Image (cartoon, one colour):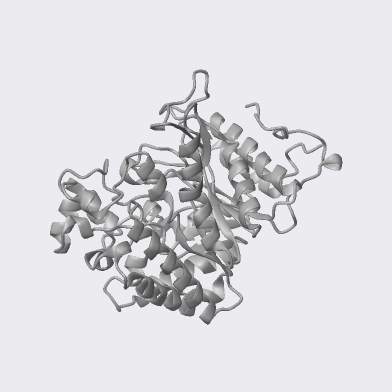
Length: 435
């Protein structure tokens, strides 16, 4: 792929003697997963419920997922064998606190062993306390629009840090609190609680929880003003709770910031979305130790909303544009806005053609490196995702993994992109030609 930016995307090459790299010593190279997408059997959380109501919007059940809950030790060993030095994963709140105020020693011991396995294999763990899924009891009482949720989330975060905080030093409070804003712009979720009435997924969940559909405020698909306020308050409360236990913990959250481009007539819409989806969340991040940034491609907006890819654009099998330069734009925008340390906590490509993923990774990582060379403080790059997994309402159709998973046998097979990422990691980016 040819970069549209002024700085050329690096290509493989050059001898070891002449290799240079913009990536600093200690840079973290890894992959990311989320508990519900890989563990399997998370029957106590809200998404499991949404998957199983009549006429659900979810394509299929998560079921056993990738059985990572029992196979985590071999999976962690596999990631380390590729040459990576970090692993970002999430804790499942509904396992740790399956009933309000009731904490599971067994679940805590499980995650403690995951952290030990990371340490044993030389992987620096980046721990996300909440990655979209919430205990069903939390949703029953109003979820991410309820005034009590920040305190309840902070209590959970404090308990986790007390039990596990000695084994990790980088914590993400929550994953993509702003994703719903982008999904709302695309017409994929409701902007007001009353708009949930009549939606079969929320109606079915409400019946099961003994509430009404307008009060079913899950994290991932709540784009309401109330949800914005509660998520921001919960993040701040969580940071305070974590720091109260371990002051030296590096704490931030991860944001689904997008690289917005304007089609003719879309300039005002782009300006609004840059503010609503990107900049206001970055301002909330100020004072944190870092911000995690996550993007996959650009979002092109016309006067009436998103527009299809231009003729001649490079596409994946689903007709989505492949635009690896987005991560560079998002990183630079964040640095210009708040000038705080950044981790790329997710970046990757949905494709059945792994050659596309290899090209994507080389170009995207090149964009991150170019930003670092220009003075942006980026400290890690996590590819989404470690393995092909459950992609929410789309089920198991999308393929983001650098490791393939046989849906019948659970056998893992690293793709060429896994080895390419490992080579880049082992050389700290020097395998790409920066001369």
